[in-house]
Image: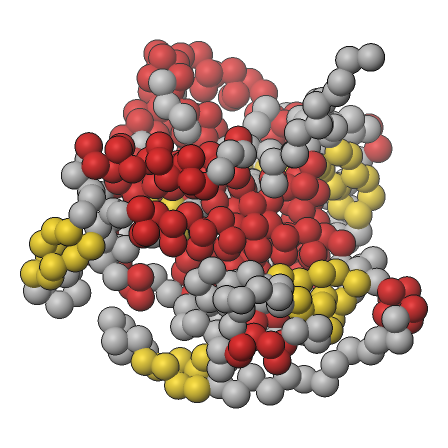
Length: 433
């Protein structure tokens, strides 16, 4: 009998979390305190890595460990000579953009790489785990804090060990692990049945014993729980998954209940796509009540079977894409069958919203744009983000033609990708005029 090799599946949510990050602005890359708390959920930064080529090499190396596996030691050994060739190694003199002073600084070293890999991998896994926690909290509504028993464990984290609070307890915004560099604490989800069988109840609110801490880079003073390293007293996964502001931006005229419904639907669809790598679609009627849903499979992630004939007047759709793009070909279909609006979310949390203004004509306009933009096909194909650029330009052009109202709220990485290619977006839109 032939042996079957079982390989671990990639941690989809953790990979999506890392991929969603844009680069911090250059003036915020000198010191680890220049990007703070929830900002880390949106921006990738390595202190003193001021150049994009350097920070890209580091981010790509960390991401490959999650995507392809392998050991951190091997990844470090592969990355070190690349950074040395780029001149980012050893000690150097560098200008501090905040103070204007020249400083003697440590750039790359094997010790620094160990900290960089460990911190970012732990944080990515924690953020990905939080996405799974949110997706399954109805069946697993409790979290148990676990501190692993090892010689280097932090004594200040012992007071959280074995404590249980509900997933929605605000405490997880302050002490969700990791709670410091090389912190090995984690959480375990628990069910109602497990709680009964083990005679456990929710613990009393924890005394965080918060202490003031001053960020000398920004002058901001914050309260940090005792034993938690400053900067770790947040929940990166919760910050990454929070789309409230994005929904408000793409639905400015909607009421509070309508925005809350949209947020719930989009968050649920995104959670399923992050976990399964397959797209999802939900249809709501004019009153905002869900009427239909469809999901792809891992074998056919974008193939959604929708009975468009069942649409009621005034229906709207919500879609979760598996890739970063501003509407696929489904936008034309959706409007031609009479949907009043389409709202989509991508793995990074970018939101795209289009309101139908000229029903029945979108397919012809799609074809017109494709014909006129064909001259840029080779240029787009050479770009990793070519499909994103193309679909965004197409939506902008459709809006100029009066076919739709187009609004969007971008994740940081998507915003930076479109900014890098702003001239190409402009040329695509003008070519189709």
